[in-house]
Length: 65
Image (cartoon, rainbow, N blue to C red):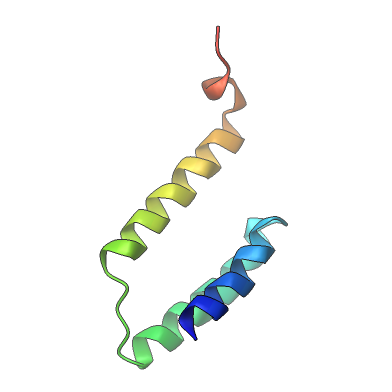
């Protein structure tokens, strides 16, 4: 069930991530209310999304010289 929910959100990542944030926050709240704590996986996901956003924001950072 959780994988299916995550997959639905993942397809939306191809669009604007800013539009996805409210849905992610709602899902996070629902998971917490259900007693589901993703722990380290969540930390890795956040770090990955942060790195992705940095790469998009700083395009020169991933160009090779």
